[in-house]
Length: 370
Image (tube, rainbow, N blue to C red; front, side):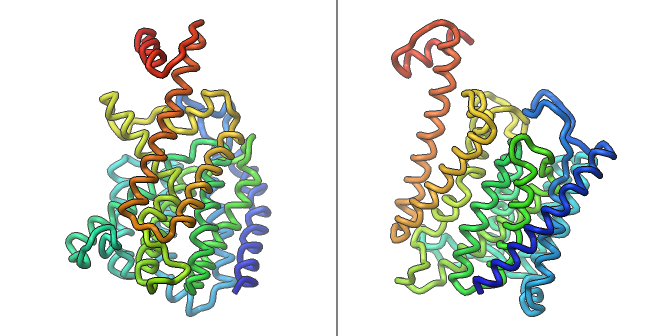
């Protein structure tokens, strides 16, 4: 099995590397670029829709190395990924209305819920609970799919960030599924990892191409399905298994901590400021780090390191239940967010020629300045 993982990874990686120069020239020639506006970080117009080569390399490698029986097992997942891919492609060409995009995510979510039986069935030991009835399981599953799908889409705003976080998620879950003897999921994840690594070769600062909704949406959807399967399979493992995480929900949160916490943070900020939670702005975590003077690659490495630390914490505490581990992760995440706010406020106040000595002074000075 390790040899098969290596083969499918290398195949998608080599295919991706060979496709990107072709697509970059094609996009540049036809003016398929990310236009500059007030919210964008980049200073030039860069080709977008980098998700097309990611998807093509992934799909070709999948059909080459995955057996017909495994393809049959994953046919509905692959079908919904193709649907989401074309949704993102359409959105990159002509922006879809939020309600249309939302409905277009709900439809494949419902399809895979019924056709593949991929669903959230309980609270997985968080508290004692019986399996959810259908009318509870369906909305919770769809909500989870939408949150994870769009949270990953929201971090696609910095050279190298979405691709690097995507690699971390894929390697973490891909390794676990392989060890847990679910090879078809492991192969799919390593095929996707190879194509994303090829994308990073052209997306690292300075980026020659962006992922776009074409890539971010189908990757986010893929991660949501992976997460639901992880929760179900992990919960069914026997007690004492070295692969079992007693805090399954917390572990999933740890693997996806960067997109999930950034989404929670940005929505909270917008609500506090009495703005729409869906209104675009430049308050994402990576925007804050850039304002502190970090470069794109430094910001990406810091956030990736934080992601790996959270995953390491989940592995070390795999015998700890969700009741303890979820509040712990949220507490750490909240304090990191407050530290960012402290640093940016201190920078703003310092630029005004003052020298505050405490957080309270900084906040007061910031309020007076505003």
